[in-house]
Length: 121
Image (cartoon, rainbow, N blue to C red; front, top):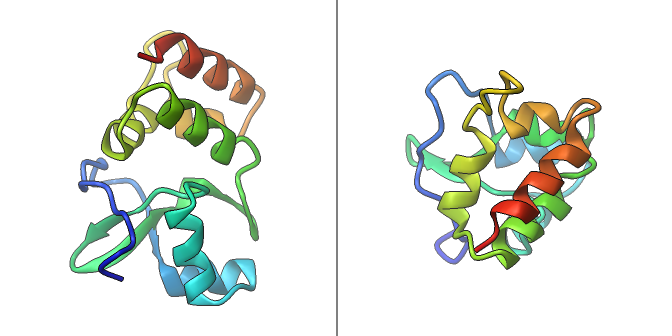
């Protein structure tokens, strides 16, 4: 797990996180496949209490939330670091009163991608 790129744990304390094992169980993949998804920017993760922790909001049932991988790509391609991308995903937008990570589960998902594009660089 040393080579898996993890973000600084700047997540709010109340953000539910899942272990690699929990995510692999949900998705029906091996633990190594989940770690590859993190390495390939399909998911972002932090180290919490010595373990790899993936925000539960990144999953929608047994799948990665639909627009998350594309949004991560937009943020990273736009000059955000992994840490900055994770912070952005969990910072509430005042006009929406929710975080982008929460918005990905509703009709505001495309708006979050648009905002990420506008904030690039």
